[in-house]
Amino acid sequence: MESQVILGINIAAIGVMLICMYLVYSLRSKIPGGVVGKQWGFLTMLVTLFTAGYFVTPFFTHLPPNIINMIVALIFLFGAVYVLITVRLIFRVIEELV
Image 1: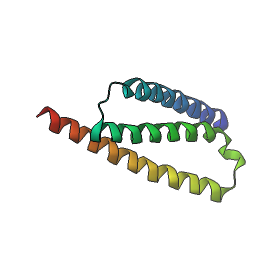
Image 2: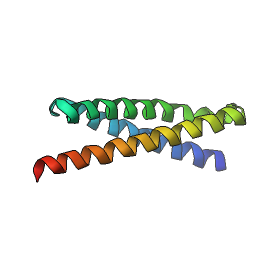
Image 3: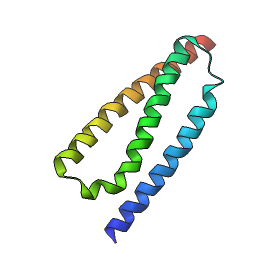
Image 4: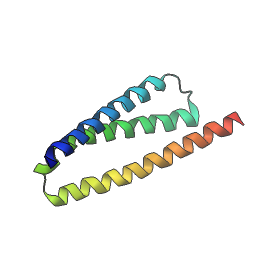
């Protein structure tokens, strides 16, 4: 039962990330160049990396604990970088609007 719940959560997370990838790539052509465009490119790369990582999560039960710990640590690191880039991007967009 627990493994089915975990698999369901993983599938839902993968679905959400696929929607995010669609949105990120859809907006890419509408983003101007310069600093915003450069940050959007990096943001796109991180969303792609996260989506690939999410596809691996259903197989975590087959990995040794030390590998799982490393993957989780990397997810936290790249998640923090993602948040930093997103906040900086929003900050720059607001600066341009004001």
